[in-house]
Image (cartoon, rainbow, N blue to C red; front, side, top):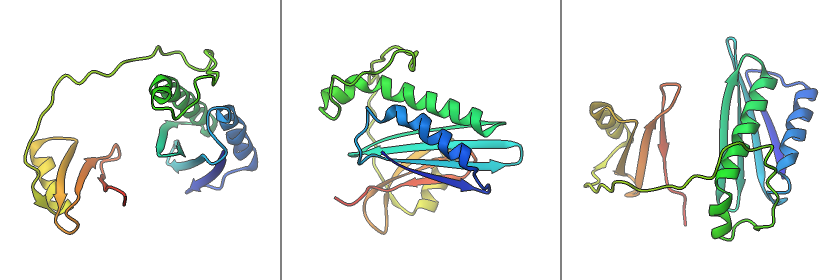
Length: 175
């Protein structure tokens, strides 16, 4: 796995980088060598946020944790990633993305497998609008996300409210 470590508003020490690489190395038996992991550390006031994104063959695992100490946030985010991987193990095996003989140590993951059930399906007309208009519509409805057809590209996009109060835009990638 290729690991990239980025510091925003902070200069990272080598011992933190080595610790992050060592903790991520326990996922090496799960991911191939072509997997890419990005560790982003952001410091704002007295909060330190560690975000880890792992990408491999179209699958994306992402976790973010905030703590007073950078090492504590790293421990929490590694644990959260482990839980995500454990929960999705059976789904990945079914889609033949991961070999079923991969050993997932139970000590790392404390949550049982869960099943997803779609309890409601809703269909609606998707209007053509700009992202700014979609954000206004989302806010008027009091929703956390809003799907619309972009007036420039004609593609289905989604705007959403981020935890920090800003907005995000999801745009489909090219084929």
